[in-house]
Image (cartoon, rainbow, N blue to C red; front, side, top):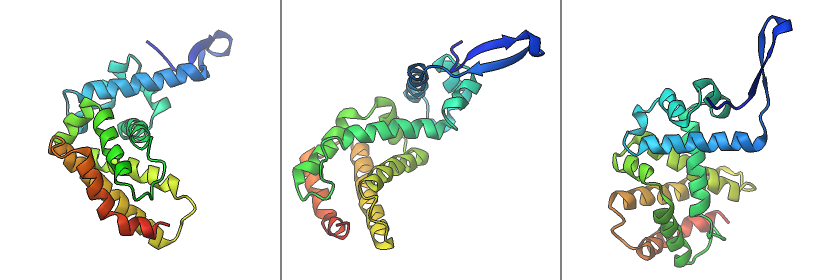
Amino acid sequence: MLLKGVITSNRQNGGCVHLKPAPLDFSLQTDEWIETALLKIMENKHYTKITIIEIAATAGIVRQTLYLHFTDKDAILLTILDKLMNEVWEQFDDIQSNSEEVFATLFRNWKQHIPSSLLFNITYKDRKIRQLIFKSITDYVDKQFSGSQSSIHFYTRRAFCSTIHNLLVEWTLQDFYHTPEEMGALVCKLTASMRECME
């Protein structure tokens, strides 16, 4: 079994077991094993039916080790989605841009980087998946506007995120029927007033 910490026994202290902190790179590697395990299971199983025990077993670790890295399976998926969003928004230099091509790139990157297991679960219309995708989008957008704290800015950001979230998910459900350029033009038009309010 692979453990985050190195187990050492102190026989002179009543046989107590102590965990020594593992190197950072090993900890990150364990994170990757856990994330990969969840995605692998999601290829053939609906997210809501997956258990922590399954994820740990697939990752080759014990459940207790998994909990040293993540609080629950939602935290695992949210980490995966955050990484996906960073890739999706990678070329999105100016979130308030009026360029249709900028939004087209957003949709193009989504289609290119979305894991097949996540695609399977979106198609299944899992409500929890949608909630976590929305949270990952709002987390990213909020970081870009950390200085804007008024209630109007907050509601505007949520409306902006909701529009992008709904169109990304519905576009996925429609098997990417429209081109990224068409979707980019639509989002650019729909969010024009929102982006003005976020300035």
